[in-house]
Length: 328
Ligand SMILES: Cc1cc2nc3c(=O)[nH]c(=O)nc-3n(C[C@H](O)[C@H](O)[C@H](O)COP(=O)(O)OP(=O)(O)OC[C@H]3O[C@@H](n4cnc5c(N)ncnc54)[C@H](O)[C@@H]3O)c2cc1C
Ligand code: SF4
Image 1 (cartoon, rainbow, N blue to C red):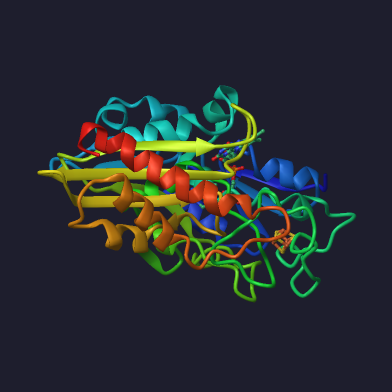
Image 2 (spheres, rainbow, N blue to C red; image 1 turned 180 degrees about the vertical axis):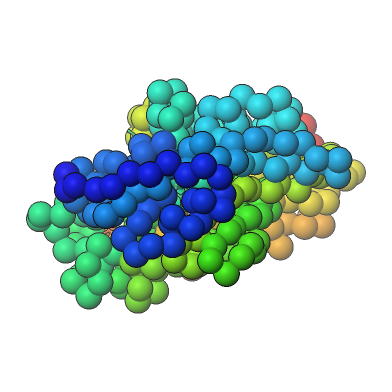
């Protein structure tokens, strides 16, 4: 590991002032960033520790929930409001990593964790456009079991690894940011980018911008929700495919549905086509399957991950059938 400086921010303004310097990175629990520094994939000159600021989880009068970016993953999953009103989020967090890592990891760090593409980590032996723009991508024609089937590009076929973000995408979360230009808000689904020809640009954040909080609108009162993660091992493994879903029925018909997919794209994938195909339709297995087919219509397999297309279709249909219960 290379030498680096360390400062602990006292509040949000202090963090933004310190974080605006070139070569500086914010430090959450360090469970991803420090690993990347050990591998010399990340080489910050200075770390600004933001674990001491904005860790509150606050229920507000309008039914929304405001989550400080420094809140630990465990604290969020265990919060009463999350367990009772946003079970899809609690399940998604608990499906990720291990209890020890979730105790360290912050919400802001989870959102900005980097891909688990093994070629990205292999600094010494592999070409990677995300690490070194213009170098090439060894994953595209290499071992691609865990890689993307939606929204990828010739430059990069990596997936976003977060489980929590898939639930946040389905829940219409908004990210509160603070940077040199002041405060702004961004829907979570607009935070991460598809790779295009610049996979090194992973988000729409400005340099030095800090995630301060995540806002969840009140969940639709009649909606049932869940998260299902399909992976190679029962624990300590990233998603091959995951589905976050909220479903609201009225007299056997789909009144409202929110769906997001993980493990399939460079960003948490809001399944808007499936949602549009389902609204107003009877809550039947045939409708669920047709919606899943619509969402995966443009999927493109790589050498080793063609199975993900049918796996995603089946997981979407199975999760919706589970939420519909006897109505399906
Ligand atoms: C063995 C292992 C298994 C794992 N399995 C899973 C899994 O199955 N599912 C899953 O979702 N995750 C998994 N993870 C990843 C884990 O969830 C992340 O490492 C963790 O959430 C990152 O949080 P952190 O606070 O430690 O972030 P850090 O490592 O501190 O930071 C990550 C990034 O976020 C930036 N950052 C941090 N806070 C802020 C902020 N407030 N504003 C702006 N930028 C910020 C940092 O600069 C850095 O770029 C696993 C990790 C390990 C090590
Ligand atoms: S898929 Fe993306 S992260 Fe992986 S090697 Fe290719 S460019 Fe790098």
